[in-house]
Length: 162
Image (tube, rainbow, N blue to C red):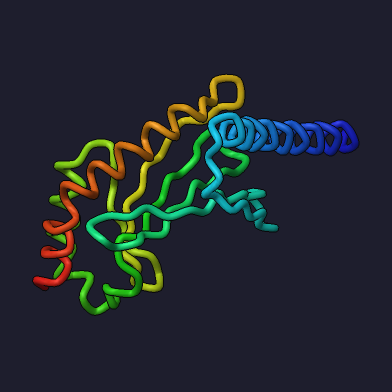
């Protein structure tokens, strides 16, 4: 009985790894087919088998690091670093209301602060293997650029005001 459980767990892990690999292959093929060559790919040896597609976006003359994080889950994360290390932990309580207000008023994107104090914009995108659509990821990246172009000044004003 124990052997069957072990087999099932190993099979499940292999299935998850294959699904992640399929998503990665689809994303790489989309980038190649569309002659998009601004991404570097990094595989992380972590428990989720994360692969990161790193790039950047230019917003109001600022170059913002951007990443698409894929792992064994049915989601991928689009993450844009709006400002690195600008929010120390002591400043978080002062900014919490402004961040919550932005999160309540901006539906497709959510704002977070990393452990290092990086101010981030995130989008969580469903990405189950059979329905994963890299064109949708590309469209959401485009929306993120438009949003940041329109709101970057307001966002940074809220960050610097506190």
